[in-house]
Image (cartoon, rainbow, N blue to C red; front, side, top):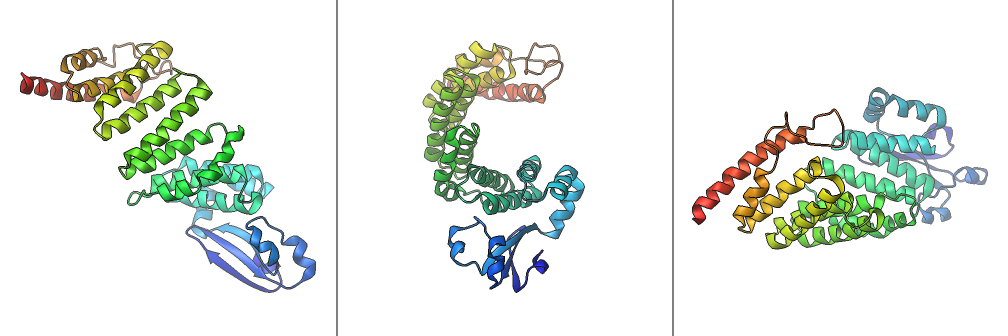
Length: 320
């Protein structure tokens, strides 16, 4: 692409993306060089960004794994909104891999170039990149400073254009905090998430109950089991009312509730909850919300139940 421009050309190599620049002094070209990539560059029109490309390795992966994205890029152009959206979706579809990082970084750079720093679409691309980085980087997940630094940008989602993005941002912040055993920051994020979900879905909704469960798990990790039990109990009651006793989410919450009772020394009550869980996924009435499909979580629940009961009975023997 830089061969089309007169003057000196140069590139900056990021991890997965190449930024291509041109250094020109031709007034007639200035109208072609307008960009919102950074406001300061408006005063330096002689050195401008002219291209953002994936490195060759990931271009080949795009052609093989994501033909729809490659076709959209060829027909509509890399900067088209639909092409960038497909690029973001490609990143999320392979999250946890190096490819996800490549497509997420590319999408973000394109958004910055096309929409600027203050666009809600750019904020969403930032969020996707953080999610991909969190899933991919197994050695260092300390993203707290990065997330907190850009929190103001994420507030753009409050205008209702992307209703789930504030939810995802709070989830990401909590997960990053949990990875660093920062229970206070994690609890703060989940407390905000509860309020967001209660306002959006209603008090006592399954979505709110899920957030109560996550907050309870943070309290459990911090060895505050009495507080955790209270939150699990509230979540469980909401699941029972909204989804019924046999829904998989209700049963999973019941299992967590039983464990919290065991942790606070209420062994008899814990046993009651554990024994009421399904014993055989092949002949129970578990409802996972997908009629005719068996959920792998059922079998996992049976195994966890057996281990938990074994531990419970050991504790009962020690306490007697």
